[in-house]
Length: 62
Image (cartoon, rainbow, N blue to C red; front, side, top):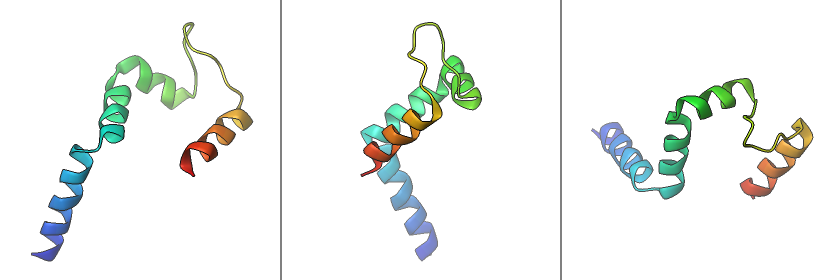
């Protein structure tokens, strides 16, 4: 029963986390999910090189 309670607590935490909710909305968008898979952008977005993307990811992970 402890595993079930832990899974329930984790799910509730994810559902109430605003950053997680926004991420789900973004990847739920067909265009965004396609861009994410191909690491591409659309005409409205700024294209980043791989090193810049890694640097920004590292900054946001701290």
